Amino acid sequence: MSFIITPLLTTPLLKVPILLGVAACHHTTLKPPHSSEALEMHNEFTLSDYLTSGTSFQLASAAILRGTLIGLSVAEAATILAREFSPGHGAHLTEQARALLLPNTYCPLDLHASTMFLTGSALTFLGTILRLSCYRALGRFFKWQSTVEDDHELITIGPYAVVRHPSYTALLLLTIGAPLVLLAPGSYARETGLVDTRWGKVVLTTMFAWLTTVTGALILRIDEEDEELQKKFGGEWLAWARRVPYKLIPYVY
Image 1 (spheres, rainbow, N blue to C red):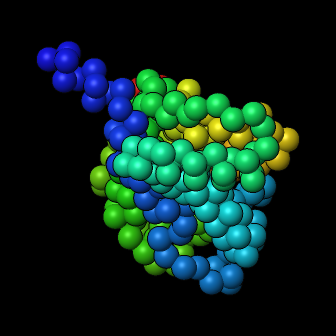
Image 2: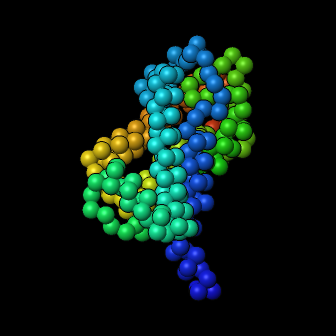
Image 3: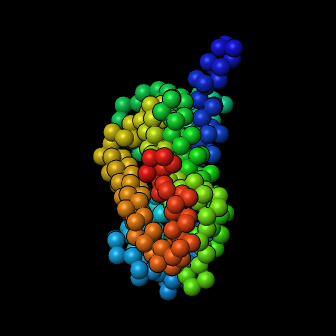
């Protein structure tokens, strides 16, 4: 079987559907499932929330991050297709684009699916599935702004029967997965030298620093959310907390 599996794992074409799937994941998870009015913004939480400090800021920042992540994934998939199905013309276009955007010495691109890439892709898909299951379980109560509405219901089904803050678990998986996919050996950013340019370093560092900061801020807010939910639901929340003692990672935290 190795004569079948080895070529499959080494062909760059394997990356195309995975990259497009990763792009779809970022498109889905980096935007709110429901719109929220500014008047719905909370006043119960005191910890600085970099994601929900303002509707306009949060949407603009998420849109820029989403566009960058999707753009890099689509660019790599397009490059692979161009090179594989029209080697001469595709290589010429790649070299021309690289000469325009990254004026360094050209070297052949080896856009292969490394173990790091496959691991990052798996984390991204897993995080997206978990995030979507949170959307489904919470329904209209899932919002980027931290709100406890008058008719709020305590949701304890689906992923909320495993950990109390599964949407943050999903963000953690996505935060780890994104750099693994885009910066893995054999990735577009690495092979074209994008990560070695001044602007490339600035863009990539800013992008991943923002994503890490947002995820970290949300995780740090877990205790405040638990406190507010306990105030709202009292004994119902305490019973849920006894059944589901883990906040983020089963059997760990």
